[in-house]
Amino acid sequence: MQAWSDDRVQRVIGTLLRWGVILAAATVLVGGVMYFGSCGSTIPDYKVFRGVPPELRVVTGIVREAVSLNPLGLIQFGLLLLIATPVARVAFSVAAFALQRDRTYVAVTLFVLAVVLLSLTRESSKIVVPPERYAPMCISSDASPRSSHP
Amino acid sequence: MNSLEFSLLVWLGSVAAGLLGSLTGLGGGIVIVPLLALWLGVDIRYAIGASLISIIATSSGAAAVYVKDGFTNFRIGMFLEIATTVGAMVGAFLAAKVAPSAIAVVFGVVLLYSAYQSNRPRPERAETAAPDPVATFLKMDSDYPTSNGPQSYRVSNVPGGFSLMFVAGALSGLLGIGSGAVKVLAMDQVMRIPFKVSTTTSTFMIGVTAAASAGVYLSRGYIDPALAMPVMLGVLAGSTVGARVLARAETRILRFVFSLVILVLGAELIYNGLTGRI
Image: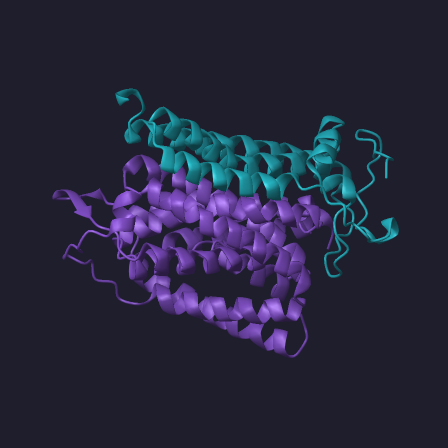
């Protein structure tokens, strides 16, 4: 099992984390530039908590908004990539410990992975706020049509 | 103030927070929430969501460097992540049940403690503890590089550290911070792990801990992309620059000054929470 020494595992983890952060930051930056292009002159309001629109709260919705090049959807997708970075690190660790035949730590990392995935994939069925109370998404002129699904 | 100006202001504040946070080792996330909530009038739930995102970015970026340097003990980190991720989910659920003013008060107390903790003297221990059966079974004993070659160390009181890590995770999920101060307390003081290993392993754990509560925050609508964007990019830029400067900076005075800022912010949060202004 020399092939997967702790040293090598640590180096792969380091590279994985670095590129995850770079990729996420780049996506957020692109989304941010697009956001300023279409919504830069709107007046922000964060004083009253209304919560972001439901499509930006779940993984499937965020991916859909990002694909349709909604600036906020793209930023949210970048944030999702960022959240996924440490999760990918845990997933890689499971594989690395399995290759080292370290059963104790395969169990440990699998448990951590399960907790994090449970938190991320739990669809929010409990959204009870009426739609008009959500923070409005900036409505852009033409480049990025606002999706109309509820 | 329009969105562009507001974002620029938030970005500048976040750069400063990231820079000071990495130079002093206190982490930038800890001042983001007070900055947004007290000075820019942002609802504390949006502030916590944005802060949580920013600490995933900085801790992953920093961990990428530390893990290659050989200080991080990733077995200790991964075992204790069991406690911090479960704690983080509990904390994130509590965040929705507890009144914002109560969160502000708890936040203030954690800030006061962090300021105290960062200025405590910390002599490196020379003695080696007796082998601990739990730590041995979990292969936690290891070594770290020093100027005199690798220095080996033993880990004690795993259950004690594990319990405190649950608290650290819950605070992280409740407040959207890394709670590095509590993590270091658990490893350095309770488990008798060398300070440098404790801090780097704490950084390594923060990303996963935060990811566990991020899912809950996301589904509750706390993570606002337009607000999280300047916070994340700002803290990341500031802490990256800070890490480059760190090697040649005199951080003792800086740390003292930053601690004073944190003390004031902590007191202000407690006051605003108790008087119901948040």
